Image (cartoon, rainbow, N blue to C red; front, side):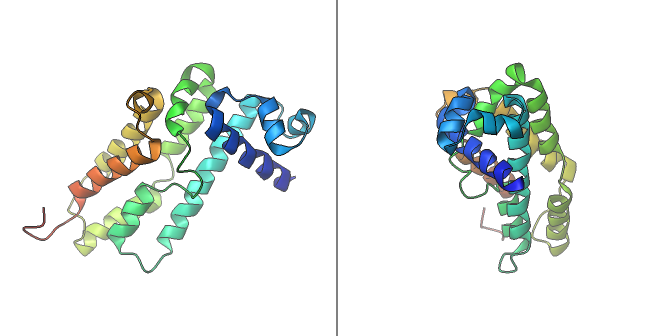
Length: 192
């Protein structure tokens, strides 16, 4: 059953990438080459499918995060930068900024997105602390760094600001992470 769930979720991500939240179950069935009836035996309704997709995407992000943390070729600062801006391969083209429309149409799903954004920070916090101990990160208030990143990402989801300004979600995330890293990374005098 897990294989068919993953197949459906991967198909959902592909259809979402192409059509955003407006995709239909017919679109998904066509993409997967299976009947809607088969999809509905696994996910009873579109909202249940969206909830599963949110968890699937965030679980994939956490898996990519773990791969970064285990990469011994990266410095603590490089690991932190990569973890803060992690998007698994294949997800960089997804316009997560479209999720702003979830709040009104699918509030339960939007709450799940917010919950996943606000939890699971332990390893990132440990990296910041390690960077401060190494002298690679200047002493900062970790809750403020966390709030800054969370608030930026949530803002991308709350309004269509990215779409209005024709900014891809991945580029916006890279920009926020770059600004945060420039603010907390220790640099040699003269290298500002």
